[in-house]
Image 1 (tube, rainbow, N blue to C red):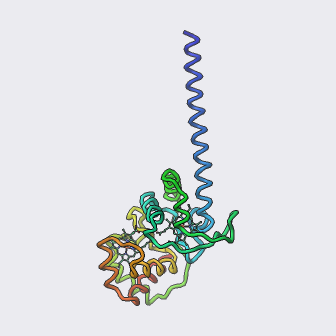
Image 2: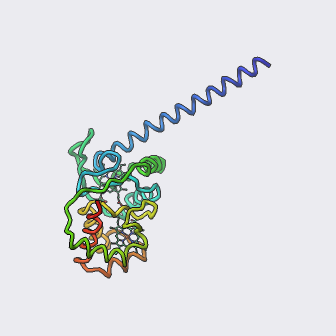
Image 3: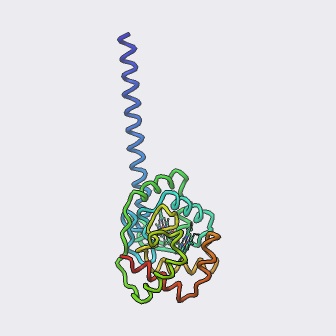
Length: 208
Ligand code: HEC
Ligand code: HEC
């Protein structure tokens, strides 16, 4: 009886240790994975590069969906340079980065960034354009990009306080048909001319 209890006790301890080790390995794994992202997207996904979007607070769903698009090359990939780490100064793009990630990696990365806080970019904008852009947003865009495009749960990126140069580039890709749009967003975006689209970009950039 005594012997059996000791055996069970040891098993319980081993199970406990095993779990702790697995959790520790997973945490170290996640840190290694996201460190690569920090090299361009900034620490914890708060970017300091005008052409690289901040990804802090992005939902797991949007991040996973976006990685799939890059893996299938459904979204254009812009060449970019690592700002830090062992690959500093070398170039790559999101298609290549996404190609090297397993589904498990994407899940870990997604959980990490979803728990971070988005920090709006302090950047120069044209106040008059921003005003025009706000009116356009409030008639054509707000239904899917609620609260001025600031909700991760909309699974549509974060527009409020996002990098102006990044948004301008993505809108160009949408217009040129290089990045796919949802069926309902397409007519709204295509109904706007270049000046109106520039105004919308200034509106999102003005939110600081
Ligand atoms: C070498 C620089 C670089 C590295 C490293 C990098 N990214 Fe990116 N990432 C970019 C650039 C530039 C863009 C925007 C242009 C584009 O889509 O190609 C981008 C776009 C994205 C987007 C789309 C954002 C949006 O609003 O739709 C996500 C999500 C993303 N990256 C996640 C990651 C994750 C996760 C990692 C780490 C595993 C990572 N990136 C590593 C440069 C990088
Ligand atoms: C019917 C819903 C809907 C409407 C309306 C809509 N969008 Fe979107 N938008 C989306 C979705 C969904 C995505 C994410 C697409 C993806 O997963 O690549 C998106 C993505 C974007 C992005 C890219 C975000 C990023 O982080 O890369 C921009 C910029 C954008 N929308 C601007 C607009 C503007 C400007 C309008 C109004 C003219 C608009 N959208 C109207 C659904 C919508």
